[in-house]
Amino acid sequence: MTFADMDRNQIEEHDIDPRACRALWCAVVEEQFQLAVSPKMADRPAEISAARRWFGTRDFFMACALAGVDGAWVLWGVRHHLALQGVA
Image (cartoon, rainbow, N blue to C red; front, side):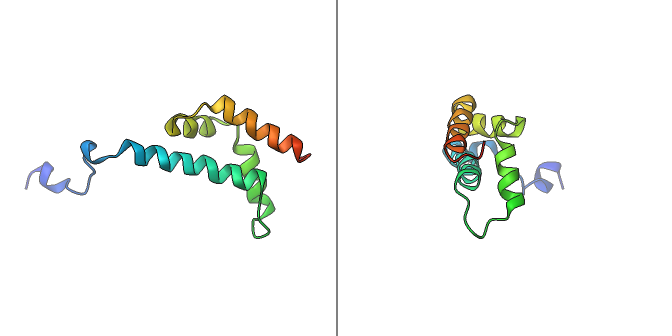
């Protein structure tokens, strides 16, 4: 058995849909935004705090880059919303 035959569980590069990847990372940023700016009653305080701290981190900027959005602009918007709420 060749390595190519053993490695069949890997995703081929041509099988990856860039739009789906971008949508995934947009959903990650959006979920963190919703948790940070408008948490629900079921959200734990530690999760809300962690979401608010996530903005501006290296991981945040990586997620924005993968989503195809300007991280600095998103960060400004998040800080603006938090300031309006008196959180930041």
